[in-house]
Length: 470
Ligand SMILES: [Mn+2]
Image (tube, rainbow, N blue to C red):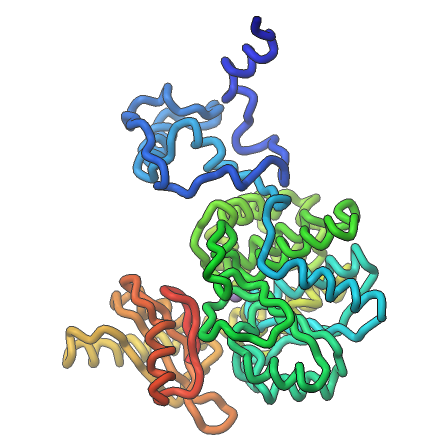
């Protein structure tokens, strides 16, 4: 005997799902999604629109054809298309490596009223990760730990021994949490341990060495034995997943503003251009929807102040080319720390002042970047004229600013279809410092690490196929 309701549901699955509005955010199970291409879908004809199980009322017939053709090419079965287009974000099944160690160490820190320091990074991922954790600890534990970001102008990337010593002098912590850095800070973490400071790392950079003295290494890439869906999260994504786990353990899921965390994690995810795995798609898609909903966006006073008030939809492209660069401009040309204040304050005046600073610095960044791209383009043409087969363009100029080397390298790599590294004076000790961008799926970060092993560069690394620091 069949229940009527069940029959209805099996006959009308698509009509009950609105697209793309009217859907619950942060519900359902993400883990059930399979990455594109892992299952062979039944073939569908691009012009057979009746097979698309979408509520496609709002799509024109032409758009439906395009969606069907796209889905077919990506290997997405028609039945999975709705879930692909509107991925749900369920953090409950997501457990990160060493999360249990973070929980027990933080329990101890709270019980003993320890001095906790959060150390982030100067880019948008580092800023959003730091903001997610600060907001969470404030909302759920009424804790306001110390926090600090490195300064691109005066520090090297990440936590080195010099930075660790200065942080200890300044903040006197007994527990340090490194966000978006720390995976390869073995020397600094060992020194911290010897001086009574435990270190927790929440990071996504590839590990050069798997032995660490960190108390917890919340970096899936540093635990190659446990492959999971979470391997390609950025630091902000990892921090959100970790906060969800902690909130569950501390029974404070109700107090935690997960909507705000999702928007911030989405910005970090889009900023770091990580692979669009199911969870990264879910974070980005949900974040874009939330950021475009004023009532949601306003939960982060500084985000509401930062986004353009032109009433136009904030697409992924606009976030990546307008909003995130404005946030990144702080760290490129000055200190990134106001970025964390921007994303954690509830003070409208402060938020607007920092948002204005972001926009102002972003204009200055654009001018510097354009100057650098023009000159680098001329240099690149000369190099390729003489050596047309060169695999990597390495260009340097005394007049360049290392803070904009990354985006300028991106433009050169795209224009000349070559992996590119641009170097500028570091302004500290007369050495060169720069950023690179990979092309043709080159592992520029891996090459830099190889060159570093030969002693030809002092420091460097990065994500395979992504940004690289030298
Ligand atoms: Mn990052």
